[in-house]
Amino acid sequence: MFDGNVRTLQRVAAKVQRVLVVDPNPAMARLLAEHMRPLGAVEMFSAPTAEKGYALARTTDPQLIFVEHAQSGVDGVAFTRKIRRSDLICREAPIIMCATEATADVIFDARDAGVHEFMRKPFNIKDLERRLEAVTLKPRDWVEGVGYVGPDRRRFNSADYRGPRKRKADASATPAARLSQALRIVKSAAAALDTDPAQARRALAAQAHELRLVGEAVKDDRLRQAADALGACTQADLAGPGGRADLIKRIDALMGFMAPEDKGRAA
Image 1 (cartoon, rainbow, N blue to C red):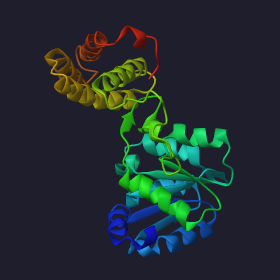
Image 2 (spheres, one colour; image 1 turned 180 degrees about the horizontal axis):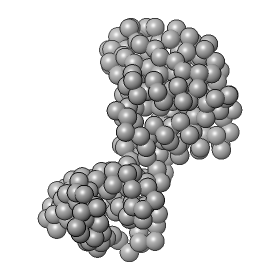
Image 3 (cartoon, helix red, strand yellow; image 1 turned 90 degrees about the horizontal axis):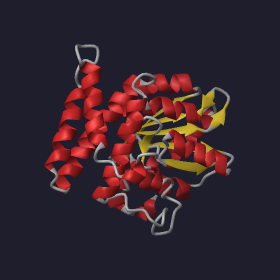
Image 4 (cartoon, rainbow, N blue to C red; image 1 turned 180 degrees about the vertical axis):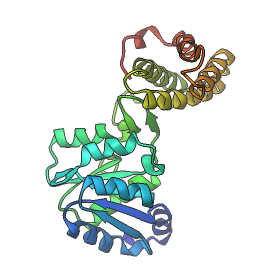
């Protein structure tokens, strides 16, 4: 495995000590366990249904999850969305979705649900190695939004990608791009305060932190202070006097930093 590179094996093994496999076919868990044997003492947990898989995820806190795309008792897309929007410790753990069909629709559904990688069945050990390396050694930024929660989709299935960029104009690391994305997420989260309040507040808190970092990077005290004010509001009791009104006021203050071309765009 990994062509016998001991250092790579050790680095990967440190991040996959507990693995959950959600698949109605028990042979899948056995095959993965056999392929991952060179990684050492990996604890493998398996569940035949999404419901049992979610319960195991809560009790075992897996560092990596494999889930079937669609078989009896398992809807991998719905399972992934549930994990991503949950309060589980493992909600940000890498998820690799497996499927016998690899149509564009299936792959895009997996990506938009929040999986890290997609792997077609049947797979060989090299296919697995590429996915393990991608999810453990090539971390991707986490997006805490409302419409989407999961790893940055611009690096989806990087194990198979060979080009320099997935988008020609990809400059996601620049302060301007980070500001744009964070503000668009804030805007969509504000719109979801009534329909999905828990995830909306979580998204607002995450973007307040991101906007503070952007403010520090560009040395903009106004942006940093506005971000701090929003962050404080997300921790307050919205049912208290002026709680919700104050939160909306802080959101509106940040909207002043939004570029005109972003005002009509969804996050």
